[in-house]
Structure formats: C-alpha cells, structure tokens
Length: 366
Ligand code: BGC
Image (cartoon, rainbow, N blue to C red; front, side):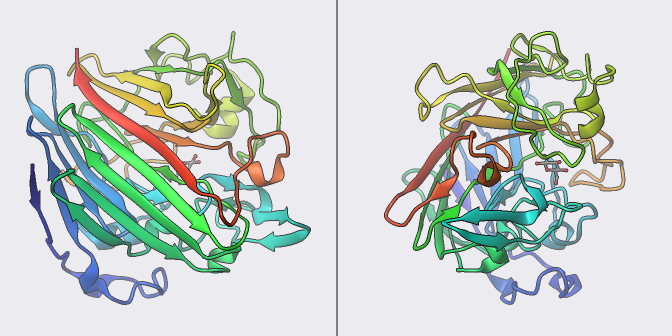
C-alpha cells in the first residue's frame, strides 16, 4: 500500500474568481494516490472530493485509466457545461424542481442552475469546495470532510459530511458516506465519475454491455424532473435487466429518450425487500478489453447518464476529446426531486439521525 501525497496543483493564477468565490486557499488543494497490491491506482483530490483517475488492467494485464478527468484543477473549475467529472455531488445530487421545496411548513428556494431547476447542489456545490483530507495508511483510505453551513446554497442546517474512499486488494473502491445535521434538511450524496472501460478518451461507450438490477424506473418531463410514476421497464428501451449494449436501443423512437437526449434517468433498484441492504445495482462489461465494473449500493436508486451532453469540446488527461457519449455515469442515489415527491423514499435528514450509505465499485476482467 503506497501513498504518494501532495502534488500541489499549479497554474492556479488562472482560476476564475467569479466561479469560485469560496476557494481562497488554493495551496490546500492536494492530489492523493491510493495503490493496491495488484498495481491498481486511484487518484483523489480534496477539491470537490474528485476521483481524477482510476487505473486498472484489461484481460491481458494492460493498464488504462478508465475515469474521465483533467490534469489541472482549473480545468475542473472552468469546464464548459459543468460535467461534474469524478466529483461528490450534493447537498442534493440530481434535480429539485424549480429549486423549491417545503419542509416543516417552510418554503426554501435554491439556485436554478439547470434551466428552471436545481441540479447537483447549486452554483457552488460539494464538487467545487475544498474538503479536509486525511490519509490512513493501515486501511488504504482517504477520508474527506466538509462542513456545509446553514443556508449554504439555500439549504437549511449545518451539515457535517464525511466521505471515505477505500481501495482494497480485491480491486474495489468502497465509498462510505456519512452526515449529520443540526436542522432538518434534504441530503442526497453521490459519486459522479464518468467511466469508459476502454480507457478515457477512447471513443464512445455505446458498445459497453450494461446490466441494471432494476425492473422499474422514474420517467421524467422535458426538464428531467420525475413525473412521479414508477412504471415497469418491460418492453421499453429502459429494460437493462439482461445485459445489452448501451447503444442498442438508444435511438429508438421513445419520448423518454428524447427528453434525456438518450439515457439520463433514475432506475429503481430491486432490493429484495430490504431497503437499506447492500445489493447489486449494475454490471458493465467492455467486450474488447474484457474490463468489468460491478456496482453495489445501499441506495434505492441509480442514475444512468451516458454522457449525452459531451460533445467533443472537452479534452481530458490524455489530450483526447471527450466525444458525445464518451463516458457513462452510474450515480447511486435517492430518486430525483424527492423533496417534492411524497411517494418517493424520503431524503430528509433530521437532527440526531445519521446519514449513512455505501457504494462499492469493483473492477475485474473476463
Ligand atoms: C445528470 C445529467 C447532467 C450531468 C452533468 C448527470 O447526473 O443526470 O442530466 O447533464 O449530470 O451535469
């Protein structure tokens, strides 16, 4: 287990003060590397708790970085169209309709940073703040902490958050989320890595075979806000219960695919009756390299977003353009807009209670 700490990222002079008013101490931004016995590496920065790189072997042992991202922190800050590469998003990952919700009789207004809706915690969400980081060599972990203040981005309550990344010798990245609050507040934290199992910048992900352990999903309106229905995926392009290529049905004539410009939806995971259990959520297999990613989670839902808004303008670590559908996200989460949807599982964290979820990203080959 090796850790190479502290490459202080340079060129911070170019950071835009308008986008990042809160980041004052740029010297505190660090990059950490976790390595396991098999040579797998995961890089994490305390800026946005971002996973910047995941290097894993293919079936012939050839290593590649399968996570989209940048080499320089200012690229994360200034990226056009805000892709949220690799970040922890919150306080509420995904969308809240019109940036509004009512809690205990009081109405709250959040930033409308995605058309008329609120997305991924607002203008300066958890992806754009500097977290405290602590490395524990004996566990091969990096623990990131952040205190989101009462009224920050419009949310109620001081929220103390801890996210712990563990790299195991079984090639798993375990992500543990924990939070407490001093006022009732919605919380929905997720990890926003874009994967391309051929390697970042190596074309589209349309040939990746995806299985989702979900018989139902939450359809959306044109602004990608759930309608509240939870229909079966049977006989629709949203049926990934048996593995199929991501691109197989993506261009079928279906209203939901028009709204999402492809897949950009929340699937309701089959939990087998135990809502909080750690269960299989997704499996992805890339046939040419043999790489497999398996995701397990305690969360009830997963947003499968297949990089519909990537358009080749962003260039990543390798210098290659991130083309349309050049990466996919599998964001374990509660359903979007839950604060406004009484029939969805609650996302309200109360004082005295603990928010605790776990998601595991396991890599292998076949
Ligand atoms: C959302 C997409 C959004 C992307 C980048 C995903 O989680 O579902 O609609 O474009 O994040 O912001």
